[in-house]
Every structure is written in C-alpha cells, then in structure tokens.
Amino acid sequence: MNKKAKTAITPTRQEDYPEWYQQVIKNADLAENSPVRGCMVIKPWGYTLWENMQRGLDKMFKDTGHQNAYFPLFIPMSFLEKEAEHVEGFAKECAVVTHHRLEPNPDGTGLRPAGPLEEPLIVRPTSETIIGAMYAKWVQSYRDLPIKINQWANVVRWEMRTRLFLRTAEFLWQEGHTVHATEQEAVDETYQMLDVYAQFAEEQMAVPVIKGEKTAGERFPGADMTVSIEAMMQDRKALQAGTSHFLGQNFAKAQDISFQDQDGNVSHAWTTSWGVSTRLIGALIMTHADDDGMVIPPRIAPAHAVILPIYRDVSQRAEVLEYCKNLKAELETQVYGGRVLEIEIDDRDLRGGEKKWHHVKRGVPIRIEVGPKDIAKDAVFMARRDTGEHSSIPRAELLSEATNILASIQDNLFQRALKMREENTTEITNEADFRAYFTPKDVKNPEIHAGFARCYFSSEEEVQPLLNELKVTIRNIPLENNDEPGTCFLTGKTAAKKAVFAKAY
Image (cartoon, rainbow, N blue to C red; front, side, top):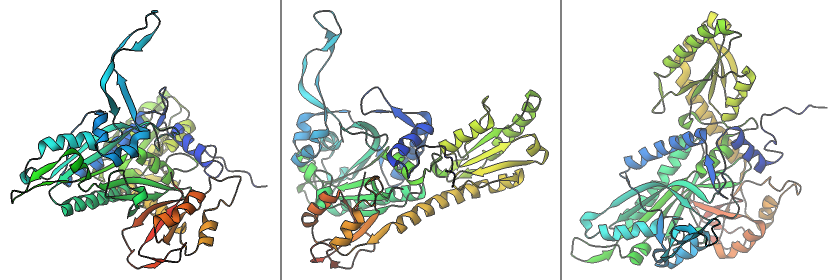
C-alpha cells in the first residue's frame, strides 16, 4: 500500500480546493477575516506583495502618460442616478450612509445615529460618477484634453458570499479614468490599458492570460465595450484578472462633460475607465501555489531569498551570523527585474525544520542555509521553491548566478502555468460535447472542473439558457487568432468569432 505523501497544506488541492486556498492564505500569513463581516485584514507579507504589484503597475501607468490623483470615498446618490444602466448594475452592491453623528440613547445605554443626511451617500463601488462630475468642471476646450488620471483606492461592494482576495465587501484597487476629444483616442486608450494589464500579469506575475472583448451581457454597466484578461486557475476555472472599458459618450452626456473643438463646435467627450484589484493576489495563489503553500514569482516577491543561519550553540553563532550578514550584503548589491535584491536573515530561536517550512509556506523563491560545515567549504545549501531542487553550491557560484536563478524560477512558473492552460483548453463544435465537457465527472467532488472551451457562437441570447443550466460563462471573445468565421456549436448558424467558455470565479 502506497503511503500518502505528507504535505504542509491540508487538505490538498485535489482533496478540497476551496479549503486548500484558504489554508494557503493562512499558512503564508497573507490575510485573515476581520471583525467586520466580509472584510479582510491584509497582513505585512500579503501587503508587501500588493505594494510590489502597485509599484510595478504604477510605473507602467506613468510610462503611458497617466497621473495619480484622489477622489472622495462618498458619492451622492443623485450622481449614480444620472446614468441609469450604471446604477442598475451596482444598486444591489451599494453600501449607503443615511445618517451623520452619533448620540447617546435616551435611556443612557449605548449610542444611536443622530440626524439623517439631506441626501444619502454611497460608499464608492467605483468612481465614474464622482470623477465625471469633476471632469465636467475641468473640461471646457479641446486644449484641456486628454485627461488621463488614475487613483489607488479602496471600494465597497456589499457582497453576500465572500472569499479572501477573490471577493470581499471592501477591497483595494486602482481605477483609471480618462477623457478624450475623439472616439478613436478613447478606443485606443482602452486597448492600451488592456495591453498594460496583460504585460504585467505575464511578465511580473508569471500568469498567462487571454485578452478579449466581453459580450454585451458581461459588459461593465454603462460601457459601450469592455475588454478583459482571463486566466486559468489550477482547478481549471477562469478568473477575470483585469478589465478596461470604453464608455463611449454615455457618462459624458449624463454628467455634461463637453468641450469646444477647434472649429468652435461644442460636443461631448469620450471616456474610459479601467482597473485591477487585490484579486490579483488570489490569481497568484491559484496559479502558482502548491500543496506546501505559496509559490511567489521573484519579480513581485516580498523577499527574493531568505538566509537561515544554522548553529548548535552560542560559540558557533557569531561566526555563522557574520558569514550570513556578509552574504546578504553582497547579494543586495545585485539587481533583478529592476529591483535591488531583497534578502532576509531569519535568526529566530526556532528549530531549523520549523523555520524552513515557515518560508516554504510563504513562497520565498530561494532558501539559503548556512552552517559551520558550509562556511568551512565557503559554500551554502540552496533550495528553489518552484521545483524543490536543493544542493550545496560554492558561495562564489551563488553570487554569480543569483539573478540567473531568479530569472529561471520566473520563467519556469510562467511556462508551467501556460502548459497547464494549453493542456486544459479544447475546441468544441457541438452541444453534446459541450454538455459532456462541463458536466462534473465526479458528483462527490463537483469542484473539479473542466477547463476552457473555445467555441464559435451565433449570439449570446441563443446560448445563454444552456450556459445558465451548466453554470458556464462566456469569459471573452479573444482578440488574437480569431478572424476566421465558423459554425455555432449550439445552433449551427454561421458565427463570426470564437469565444472562451468556462466555469469561473
């Protein structure tokens, strides 16, 4: 009888994927649920990961001509009412402030809200309306355009079923909002930001994505077009990792963002919005983590490597620590991915095995152990988190190869995720195969899903009843390699494009 391999995370992905996900977050010390229902506390290791994502994205935004600003957390309810489709799309998720001040209860026990507000305030679910109100003041002439602003902020969407990083009542994100003189400029902006997101996901997060356009039923409320990046998680479900929206003139008309052009004519502007959130951390976990915990791509890792001093007694401690500190200083003179290497030394009074597994579960890319025998050989014991490979190597080799090793880890994680997606994507041409593909094979474990199906479809309306039945969604219509017409898998009608179909988060 084969003995089951011991893993640091229980249950394993195969045994219970949703619970495995929660345990990875707990064991990596990324975040935990807060006393406020549906909200989370992001702990230092998780927040440093978010800061590194912020830093990378922020540079890309500024390199494409955007500036950061900040807008109010509260939005007057009347602002949302101006764009009917927008408010309908978010109404059920809005948190509403109706009173101001607190006062003691008449009986002296506890507090109660005092007077009602003249107008209810919405805690922002997104900021198109409040930012649009400001743009209406700032835009008078074509000379004022374009305006290209981003804000890093928190938003609130009153979710009933929450999961850390993937779906919480409050989350962190960035939202870009731009105004343009012409339709083409706004469309170009929409696609440019999608490219930024795709480049960041693939080059920094090592997450392969599919760029595509959302169907009308999946568009952002009030948008003329929404494009997205979609990624496959290890349970083969899809995760929308970022969206960019061409808003046409809808919000400009609702909020009178108008300008005088070069010919003296007054017309409404064209606007866009685009955003990614802390959901990216959820994407990172479900793309790369394994049954021993987090696996973090080096380009965004809070620490590139951790050094573990190993000694038996106080007499050995000084020599080992001195060696470790010098090694850390030498490694920190090197640069990988535009960042100076960030190295930790873990000299806590814990057993060696306990410290090792702490960093394995946190996903540190490289683990370096140093003891008296290593020092005698001027060598270190090095382990890679992505493959588990470990060996003793000369100190000089580690110093000369450190950035190459990190690059190898980064590339391996991307190629591994890409291979997984390619092996779990199929072309489907008929209803029977579609049904079979998306029907759970194991009724006892319905969380084990099929992957992506690329299918021609004639119209969203015609396929939607089947999708509802199978709990499948159209993720997007890929922008690349999708020019040949075909036959709808369901109706047999001629179809212009293929779409990616999947079960999704």
